[in-house]
Amino acid sequence: MTKEETINQCEEYVLHTYNRFPLVIDHGEGTTVYDTDGKAYLDFMSGIGVYALGYHYPGYDEALIGQVRKVLHTSNLYYHEPLAEAAKNVVKSTGMSKVFFTNSGAEAIEGALKAARKYAYLRDGKNDHEIIAMNSSFHGRSIGALSVTGNKAYRDPFKPLMGGVVFADYNDLDSVRSCVTDKTCAIIMETVQGEGGIYPADPDFIRGVEKICRERDILLILDEIQCGMGRSGSMWAFQQFGVTPDIVTCAKALGCGVPVGAFVMNQKVAEHSLTAGDHGTTYGGNPFVCSAVNAVFRLFHEHDIVGHVQVISKYLAEKLDGLMASHHSVVAHRGMGLIRGLELDPSCVQAGKVASLALENGLMIITAGHNVLRFVPPLVITEDDVDKAVAILDEVLTEVE
Ligand SMILES: *Cc1c(COP(=O)(O)O)cnc(C)c1O
Image (cartoon, rainbow, N blue to C red; front, side, top):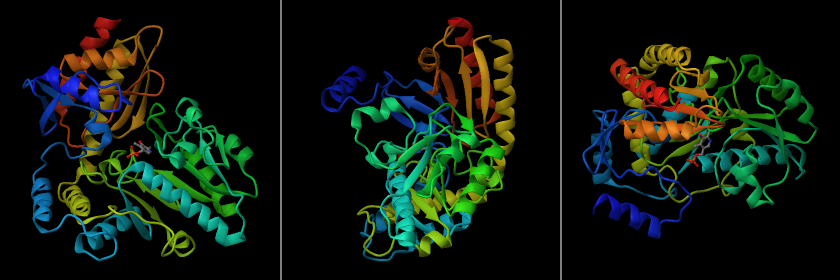
């Protein structure tokens, strides 16, 4: 197929819920993606935070191929070794107690919401519990996840959504406090807001929220689907704030390319929420995806990926500060580790335009929130990759300004 044929056939048959870049991807290698014309693109979006190890990281493919030759799927009616190992990996790394594997981030959120509702139901036998979510948050596109997503444009066409959700302002403790009632069963938030424009939690805010939760037996659900798995500079972003959630959700980089997510809970929630018959999934946590999770944890450990993030992210942060200093269109730089945003002045340049021009110049980058360039590269990028990406952006920003 030619490039045009592929694009046309996709547009003819695939429901148009995405405006795609005019690019037909063929394969990837390291931190580079190649299109069907053989043109190379430096990848600074990693399939929206999925490809944490880049493409074909040594040892990853072999682990998956080994599992393909054994068994892909068993259903959740039987035990298998990849599940035993993956569950231990996720539970140990989060410091939690029990995990449920899902097929996506949205599904991890659904499970977390169900666990919270059941926990409160077991406590007082009532069905009127409320969940506090954050404005500008993003938790996914299924009805439950959408119900706690703080973006009216995503929510409004699909109302009525799940009831009992109230929205507070992120990083505003008084706003959260004013939403708490005797019916509140959970507070859900991202440790670093991703889609909303890359806003890390303010340490006093997230600790204050944790304190409210402890005082009122409210469950703290931290969504680390985008910022987790080492991206923040620690395995889980909450570990840098000294807070302990009751439930953590993860997905995206958990399998570094295969569709797998999870919600992980502490002992208290595990003992007093979902039991046999309460929740399920046909595919979730099958041997194939668990073998990927196990390869990812092993490679992260063997090659100290998180240590690398701590070093390389400082370098990237300095370079992004440099871009801000030399371009009047860049008005803010926020983030942690390798989840960063450059906010652009909308009266001057459009982030979408910058992303399109960057792509033409060989750099894959995406946007977030209100006119923010989002940096979620593979965690294995080098100084050379950073230099190349920043040089392309420097050129593009100069051009559009
Ligand atoms: C991507 C994302 C989700 C949804 O994950 P899907 O796999 O697309 O359903 C939820 N929360 C956050 C923070 C995300 O970044």
